[in-house]
Length: 58
Image 1: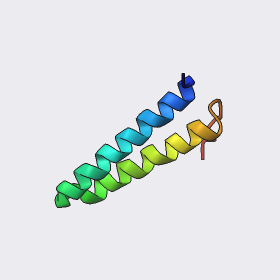
Image 2: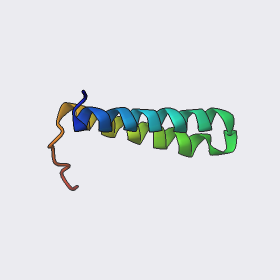
Image 3: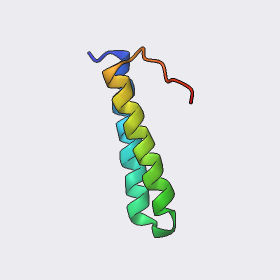
Image 4: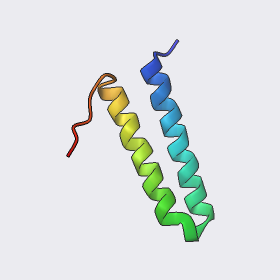
């Protein structure tokens, strides 16, 4: 059974894949959907690497 963090990362990656699919099917939305997919992938990476990590404000 996966941990909460593992499940969250999987859901984030699935959402990224969804945005990538939308980008491929809708050229006018491609840039925004690719950006969304990238953000979801980055957050999935953060959750996997350090589930209790804190994002420093800039």
